[in-house]
Each structure stands twice: as C-alpha cells, then as structure tokens.
Length: 226
Image (cartoon, rainbow, N blue to C red; front, side):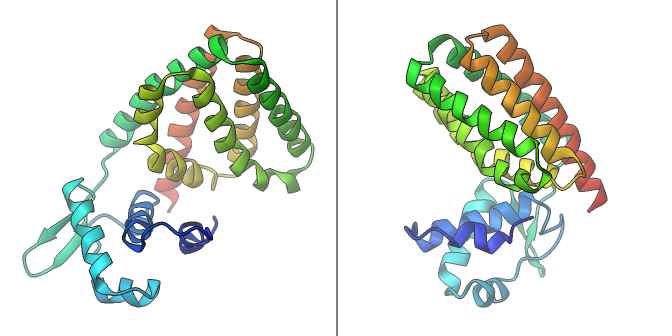
C-alpha cells in the first residue's frame, strides 16, 4: 500500500494544513492504521507530520463530531470502533448510489465521454496483460469514476458520492491488499466502463452492485488479516 503520508502530502497545490491533517487521520482510521481503542497523541502526530498541535486538535475535534474518535476520561482521544454493521451499511449506501450513477451515465453519456471510456478500457486491457502494470490501475479506477459521475448529469447524486469518497478510496486500498483483488477489481472496472460506454444501463447497474459486493467482501477479509 502507498505510504499514507505520501498520499496526503504529495500534491503541489496544498490545501489548508488543517484539511490535510484531517484527511491523514481519517484515512489512517478507516484503513485500520489506527486500531479501535487506540490512543491518538497530539504531540506524536504533530512531530510526525511536522505541524503544530493546533491543526491536530482541530482535526480531532472534527473527527469526534463525526464519530471517528472519542475523548475518554484519563485516556484522551481514542479511536472509535467502525463496526461490521457500519461497514456493511456504508457499502449498502454506496451500492445504491453508484448503481444509479452508472445507470444514468449509460443513458446520458455524450460521445466525448464514451470516447474517454474507450481509452480507459484499452488502458485497462493493456494493464491486465501485464501484472507489472496493474498498480497504475489504482488511479484509473478513480478516473473512470469521475468520468461516469460527470456523464450521469446529476450534481446532487455526485455530491452525495463525494461525501463518501474517503471511504471509497480507503476501502478500495485495503481490499487491494488481498492477492488477486487488484486484478479482479480492474476487470470489474473495465466491464463497468464498457457497459456505460455501450449504453447498457441495466447491465451497468447490475455490474456495479456485483463489484461493490466483491469489494465489501475483500475489505472485510483484509481487515481480519491485519
């Protein structure tokens, strides 16, 4: 898995430090780097990220309001448990939103967007022909997702999915740790992109549900092995 800090800090156009710190801690929690019940020490995080303790404190306050951490007497800030039920709930919501997005995209995509999907399909076919090229598919998966969201012509639906984007990326990265999952996910994304490109709305909708069910199983299995 790519270095977590590198993922958050590598962009040249940096967002505000408090947002970067928030994303770092949230990703670490969702990916299981910070375990349930584990204490998060402001001073240690500040030293690790080379920032002051103020953005750390702000990020933890924000995460506590969202239920990711909680403050306990005599212990400080600890990681809340993301239960199996909550994980299943998130995937259930994703399945509904993403399957609708894929269906709408298949119906509404413009010629230019269908051409974009054709290029991505060709790239994924090339990557699948060589295991060495599969790592590049991580980016392609999310680029395809962005094209499909644009093609769906539903800003509110995209906004709802954007609210779950941290989970989408974190769940995918953890699931990819399982041997063979990245290849299988690449095949699933290729088939999804092909269905959307070809205007097969019902097929795109069904393939999305299958893909997210497989992603859910991979994520839960990977967490058990951590």
